[in-house]
Length: 115
Image (cartoon, rainbow, N blue to C red):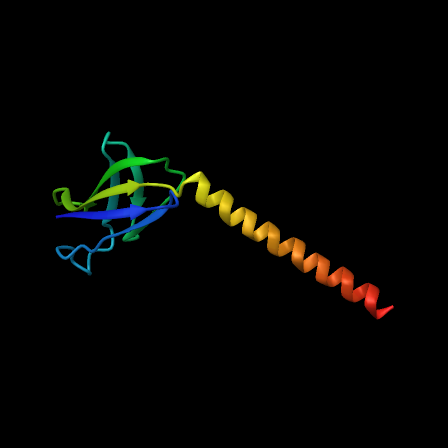
């Protein structure tokens, strides 16, 4: 099963559930690999936070690794990162800057009026 995720910010959380894992076995680890086989995460948590990604497609695979048993593939993820455009970012910046100027003008006007 491939879970598809889209991110507009460059960061995302991958969550998975291991239906085959025995809850009594405490020594199991999860391993999250990228498409090049690089281990991104290894631990007992069933989620991983990834950040700092540029625009593009990223593929990840999760494996369960328990002592005295084989390595089992749990899930595959396909993540598409598509950041907001610079036009939108600068538009929001301009709106925020305008609101800041108006707020400063109101504060200055009221402080002069009050004296």
